[in-house]
Image (cartoon, rainbow, N blue to C red; front, side, top):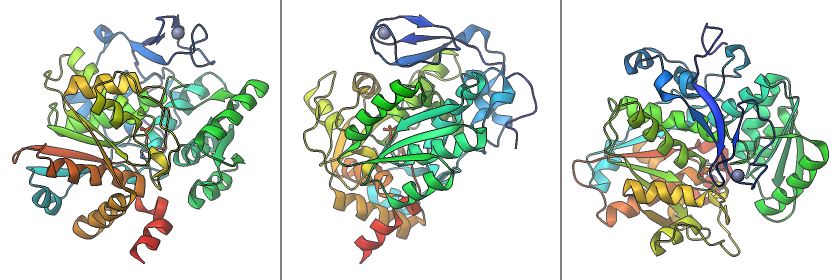
Length: 399
Ligand SMILES: Cc1ncc(COP(=O)(O)O)c(C=O)c1O
Ligand SMILES: [Zn+2]
């Protein structure tokens, strides 16, 4: 399946800039992060050169590549796509009533090819690798990103090296191997797999598709924002609640908003971006509550929601900018509240949410109790992953 019929994407991607030191790089860069300072790399675009209208975007469908002018791939034949994105915003009137908000929408990212929003980031990152003729990609992961990278690398004919911890869910480990990727398993937490990854990547010269080492995963995630704003007729819903680990999706949505304002396609009323984490690992929520511009590493993280068990997220200053500038807030819930929210979605609205995604719905319930949502306001909860990803754990909870 091709993302579309053209040979060029008409992307206005111009260069890559370091967010810390301002160093700039050509679009064909293949070594990350910033070689001057180790900072996060961010693709830049020439917005004046955009040659498409919002109405034309609205007429396209089928994948996130509908927004190709603002994605970092120029040669259309390099795109590695399985129809990721273009996911529904499913309304959940029962939940809206229970929470006392106007409307509650679940952006159902479980409907992506490997059942999580990670596919948007990996479709972008693996397409960029493909455009540069890369043969080996690698990443450490809590599980879902590793499974997604394995799928896209398989489709592109690349070797993929995935570094996980033994604690990662069985579905992810099994499917990484099903895709023919090389699975490297470690004891301990994601940081331990990360150290092993860094050593191996340097030794073998693999191309990194790791969170915020690659400049391209948040570009793919940006399309979640484009889809939500398009669905609201190029306006923002009042609230977006996001289960936050490394912050790729949160930052992607924020960048989408900023780009649409820059293009003059949206007014500058932002969606309030709310960070949901768990009480066992809440470095970003803690920083929000303390009004800090950077997190402090979380000691001894432990939560069943592995996707948000990220104790030391390097992109926290960027996340905190997005939260403070948008008027958002942070909320931490227990594992039990996350399980209960997963059942609430399944029983009240039919939607299946994995435990990590359910952290966002549990956080939404908590924010509703705090009176954060007005009775006429729209609340979008990002269901980052399908219930099948953690069905075993949910089954244990149901008993
Ligand atoms: C289902 C799910 N939701 C959310 C996250 C957090 O992602 P982000 O890096 O965008 O904060 C993850 C990361 O592993 C995940 O697997
Ligand atoms: Zn730098």
